[in-house]
Length: 289
Image (cartoon, rainbow, N blue to C red; front, side):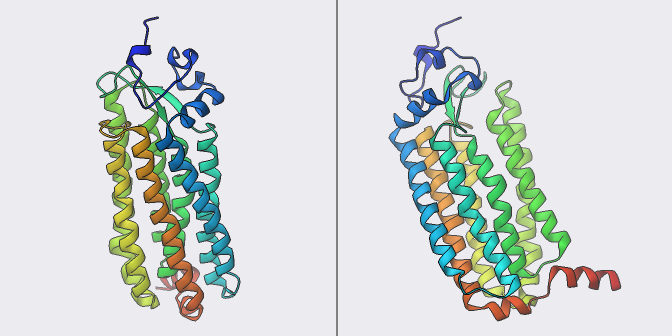
């Protein structure tokens, strides 16, 4: 087997010989990956900061929801609370090395033949947390079942194909194919957020706060595919540590700040939330028509 040590990028510092000589990320042990994370201050700090903020957000959101009694408002609160709960679980998995692997980049990639840390556990975070964000927004807008189902399923498809794009090592081209498929799912989500739900929110009387949260969500979510393309998974312009900080910064704003703004408004406007048309009523109306 050829010596790959000289090809090792700075993104995987001080990995043991067992990892350096491996042909699959599955052969890297958790202690070895954990050591690599600890030896990358940018990567490690990006994970620990998110764990700390997720923990604080959980405590804050539980406190903010103590007086939320209206059923629809409580459902929004539960969906929103699940966002930091999922995040803290996932980030602990990342910082422990459980959901981080070492991938050898395929021919054609900027780091072809080199082995790079892949924090693929982020995709688990997004797969389970972003549907909760969309559920909360859909409930806030008083949308119907079809639109809500469309947004959530397209979002899950976006996250799963994004994971495939990050993990494929057999072909550089296929990485980008999966990336483009993921972007196609994302366009469907953007369509629902930008075209379908604003009218629903106007009818529900929640258009002002929905407009704020919609713009925040769309703007920040657009940053994720850009980071993917610039990071080691794409063109490798940014290191793993810098990319991780970019993702963590987006997560902090798109999840915890978003959730705080939503919960603060919902807690103060429970009557407005409760008076919005329910999903069940909309479906029944469509059937009657």
